[in-house]
Length: 273
Image 1 (cartoon, one colour):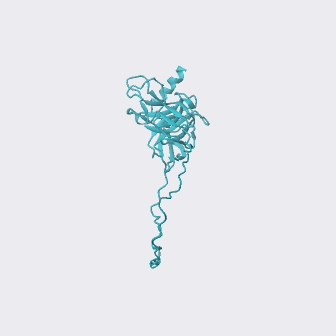
Image 2: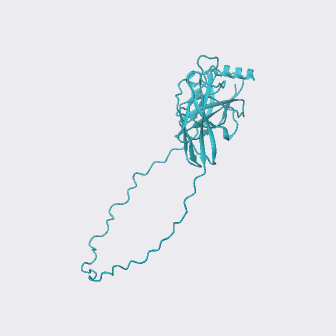
Image 3: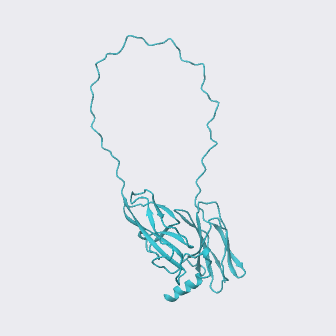
C-alpha cells in the first residue's frame, strides 16, 4: 500500500501548480485553507431545493467537491454530487442527511503534494404536510324580507346599444420578445490524443453549455475505468498538453464537464506510449 502511494505522488509532482491534480495523499486538514460549509436551511420538505455553500476561500491551486455518504461508500467518504463553491440538491425521502465538503489543495510546508480538509453539514427532510381539507360548517341564513323590491321606476329603454365603433383589430399580439431557452449541460465531444515532442496532447470540441468547470481525468491502460482527475481547466478550453513526456504504460483520458448540479462526460481516448 505504501509503495503505491509513493508512486502516485511522484507522478503528480510533474504537474504545474496552475493545473494541479485533484488527487494525492488524503490528509485530515489542508495546510493553507480549511474547508467550511453552510446550508441555507436546516429543515426542508421532500423535493424542496436545499443550497449548500463553501464559506471559506480556496486559494492555493485547489478544488471543492461535494459528497453524500448516504448514497454509498467512496474513497473520500461518499458519492460525488457536485463541484464548486455552491450546489443545490433535493432529497426524495424523509430523514437526516449529511453532506460533506471536501477541499483539495496544494500542500504548503509538507512532503505531500495535495492535502484534503472536509466539513459536514446536516439537513432534516420531512414529509410535506397534507392540504387542509376540513370543511367548515354551513350556516343557513333566512331570506332577507325587510325591503320589498323597488317597483317605482320602469326599466330605462331610451338609449339603444352603441354600435358605431367596431372592436379594434389593428394590432396583432406582440410575439417579438420570446424568452431565450435556458442552456443545458453538454459534455465536450470529439476528444482525441496525439503527440507533441513526446508529450501526450489532447484536443476536443467544446459546445455551448451551462458548464462552469472542466476536469481532465486519466487512468492507466486501454479500457480502464478507475479515472482520477489530473487537471482543472477553464470551462471554454479546447486543448491540453501534458507537461512531461509519456513513457511506458498506455493512458486512457476523458473530460468531465459540470455545473452546480450535474456532471457530464466526454468520449474516452487511449494513447499508446
